Length: 136
Image 1 (cartoon, one colour):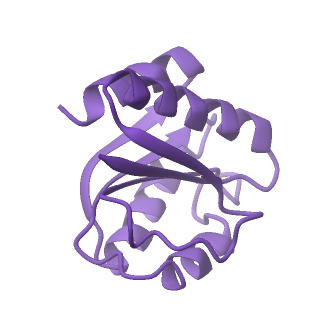
Image 2 (cartoon, rainbow, N blue to C red; image 1 turned 45 degrees about the vertical axis):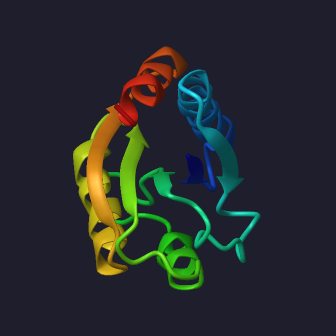
Image 3 (cartoon, helix red, strand yellow; image 1 turned 180 degrees about the vertical axis):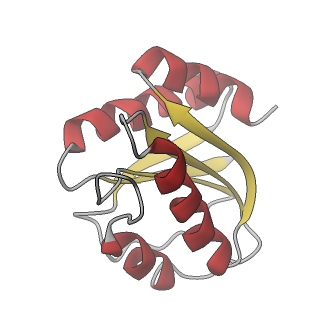
């Protein structure tokens, strides 16, 4: 199975790269072919050829009312993603985690993606466990 993990983190890029790589490690252990994509730098990446799409982003505001504007822009240019199975994740933040996750999920659903799972992740080990159990 081909899986794309896309993350958007203008401020905490290393944290989200670590979470994405943890998810990727778990998926690879289950036999998936995984590409990790930094949505901030690879803005014109097409997701049409992937069977499963995992997206993560950091909150753009203190209480999570906003997510980075690059998320909606990226999704609108990502090719044919309507009906694709997907997962949303966000890193643990003091005030913003659940609201920002909800905003990310709304953006994904607006593009027609079929969300099968969502998670707030604290560390790489938790991210790896998500990857291991995600496609079962």
